[in-house]
Length: 109
View 1 (cartoon, rainbow, N blue to C red):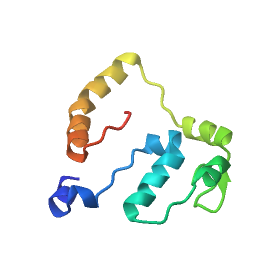
View 2: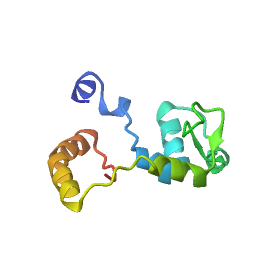
View 3: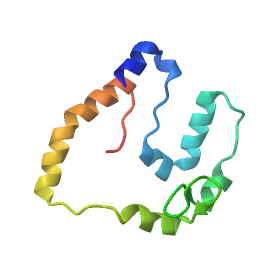
View 4: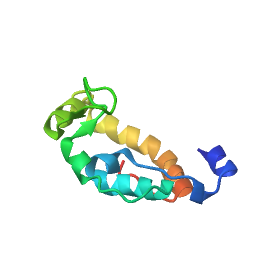
């Protein structure tokens, strides 16, 4: 991402954390819409239908209900030991911190 920030000003780039789309979808979509200069839109109706592009529903024409989407998104989780998880988190922490400093935003990783 550093080269994007070398080419464009901070005001021209907008980072979206995936977790924000999942847990704060309407608010996050409104922020993206505002960033793009689009007219205000109430996304709550669309969000209440479920998640898009999940499981067998590829694309954005069919929503997957939230309860089903949760099952689908959690099925690929790989169980790892607490020790390996801690080792991994320690390894990626400086890279994540560098990213958060660059973009001026923290994701809940």
